[in-house]
Image 1 (cartoon, one colour):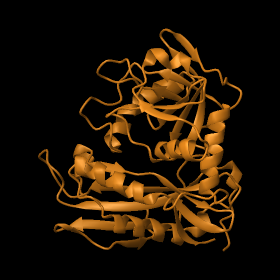
Image 2 (cartoon, helix red, strand yellow):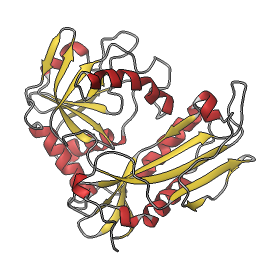
Image 3 (spheres, one colour):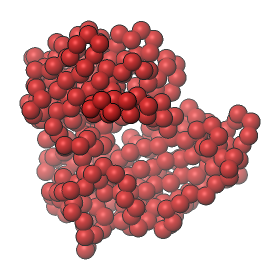
Image 4 (cartoon, rainbow, N blue to C red):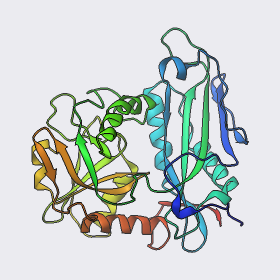
Length: 343
């Protein structure tokens, strides 16, 4: 297949329209079968639920070209389940798994020319989302919904690739106890926009958020989960009911335990123990795992032993192994890779 004429290695993490997207509608109590369209615009009522009351949630996953020339997706069934969990919390009719997977398959296959070639370091980012497009004026769920999936080729999420990042300990809260921090709702990301803007103005890549109730426990950033490494190479990741359960983090923990033979612990991580870790990484679909070198706080700068020059040894091995699985260089656990088509 002839690929688009792009400089794949120079791509940033930004939106570029591709040829096709998938659209399905929920009307009269049921989802229709949906299909591919070329129009990148959404049309809805001025009183749509998404516009009035932020009734929307989304997912993020990627398609890859493997070493043997297949175009594949990584664990899309888990994205389908997480979108369903998010939708139920927002009173949105959940998108059935079969419809979700069909949409991903069709839109990736139709845009195969946009899937970056193997070895370029770029990927095809897939954005499924669902929103209330029916009119509502009282505070209530919308009567109708739209499910869409578009794709766009992307490079690294953070500028500079995998160079260690500087974070700011945020004085803002990302999510409230018993709120919506555990789902991938648009409103959560809206809450992080201003703190993120402030941090970037000061030269930081992201914020570190603490729990809103006590401000003593590490939560996540505006768009990624944390992974820490102890001096004896134990992997520690924060446990909280108000952070998003990252599919990438879940996969990295499995890789750490079953591929690298490391001990893995998911527990509450206290802010005052951060200086004890030798490595810190941010993990998510977009970032995979990106190293953190420093965190600036009111109490001074926390500097991880891995430093600001390169990714720590353990995080690097985690990244290398997971991306190797995704690209077909390393054998994947059963069910992790969904083959969509031949390149």
